[in-house]
Image (tube, rainbow, N blue to C red; front, side, top):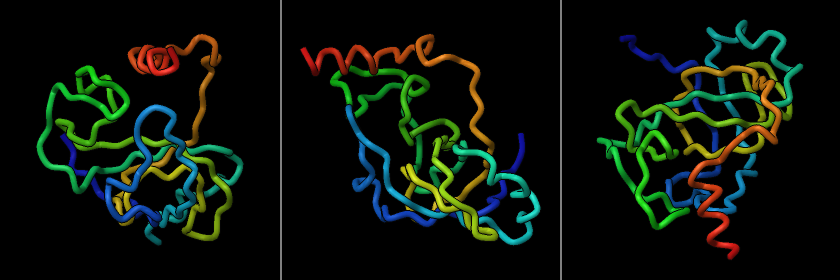
Length: 149
């Protein structure tokens, strides 16, 4: 096991979890800033060349976990590992955001779905060689089909 250490914090328009868009058709289009601590600035070298970033962060306001739960997008229960629930054995969040620009230690991004002040654990450039037609969306695709039908 390791002890995590924040590399920065999120500046977000969302102050409460109830404000973050959830459920079928939810759009994550909010702008925000990933404020990296000065001692990690060198780690941002060359990040400007990537259009999207994967942000690994901590659900620092979530306590406890449930192995089964009902997401807002479906009336059926699903396993926690098949959802994006904050109530997880290890409270780790993962978001893909669009990098708009870098200003020193600040990464201005679009697609924020984290709360203001959320600790950032890591950032990685988004890279995928999986063609979109090969991706499956599991129970979420089924829930979307039921909603349309």
